[in-house]
Length: 631
Ligand code: MSK
Image (cartoon, protein in one colour):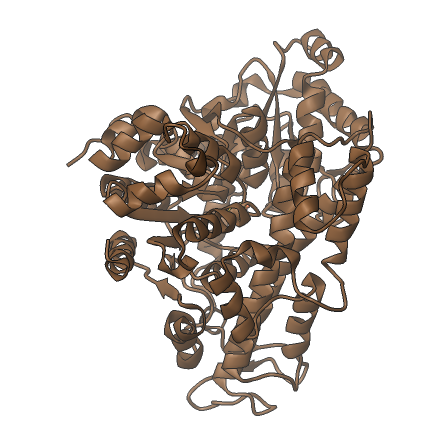
């Protein structure tokens, strides 16, 4: 058996958390660990999806004695409606993030707060969308592309522009099944309409719309979020960084950025390097300013600037518990309201910035494109001036961190592959070298591991253990979101960890000079994985559902994750979950999601709560796909 001795173990991370919780006890801090206990056992109706509260005749709860709600809806209709609403919540959230990025792109100007950092990519997207580029000023083009992108949210006719990136066969499946997403807002809105009292209660219709709403996210809102973030802030390329709480610095001002939208974090990173701010930090007695990230914001700034990753979703309270966090600055999504009261137990400033995520016990500094520079500077200054309020007796930074190489956008992966093609021109900028590796069996296939932490699963255990097992068996692992940070914290994004992998992955890592786990970004960046899968399928001449690749979200928790699951499956990629959606109350909904939709889109969900069984199930599916391809 391989020895992964260089890795940081989950046990070591748990010991660090335990010592931080002790720190918290000294100041009477609450914790998610305690709140989980307070909330257990969970409501059985909620867990199985059998509680309906979409009108005021109820709430209705389905039991053997009461098999229908007051309106007569049966359990399958109720569970299906709840599932669709959950999906719509996620699709709306991701897509609204994408919309904000479109607005940021629209605000760009020469010398302004935001500028076009990747003009080549902008021109490429403009051409893809049929927008004239010849002789146009780059900022005029940026505004035109941004406006065209914004129209994708509400256009009255047609389907999403980026669907054309998929292989022809996949586009035909979407068309045949009636799930091609139209305007993004329309899919969310129609999902709410369909689930209103007295509308759809037919599981097939509800699940079909879930797939469609998910696709409007993955191939619509999220894809625009990713692509335009690259245009604005640069397309990621491999960069070295570090991960885990040890990236926080005892003698420096620590600013933690947390959330999702890089429009804020990019500015904070910029002003933290401002000589005026650094001089101020020194005058306050610090050695400098250290910015580190949590959750997907961390992924965004790590992959573009090498900003260290302090941790993932269930580590957000830990950064405050170190007693060394001067400010935790947030934008939107995945932010615990608990950070407000928790930061009051320490000297930490909890700074909220978005009208979309306003919370008690925070300092609200509203952030807009037009005033981004001055607001970011004010936030950095607030943090710097807070350094003197630190209580040295409460400072406890666990000394654990690992090296990581991050930033594998599709463009970066292709560039890495170009390096090993012996310059056959027809193989440059393609996925062909990777396809050859898969065909030859050097790599058996790939798993896209994504998603959050969830207290239902021992934090990070599933991510790390699954990745190790897959790598030992020559399965390539690509990651995003909080799964990515789990890998980085453990050390799986350190190129040196390739030594523990199976022989095939080991060879590929050495040849291509990559770490065994490839970091593809934040949760909106799962759209990068869709583009990667589409490009592999097109270069191979097959559909996405035939590639030996599966998706996995072993510790997922959010509505966004369900939306993602829907678009990944609808794109033809079998998806394995370690946490059950709230659907088990309906055999029909479970039957569709875990079986029936395969007839529609060539893939389905598998739910397996026993984490130890997940790798074998995924490898079995990968081998089935290989066999079907005759490789
Ligand atoms: S931040 S959605 S906990 S991946 Fe994107 Fe992490 Fe999940 Fe939020």
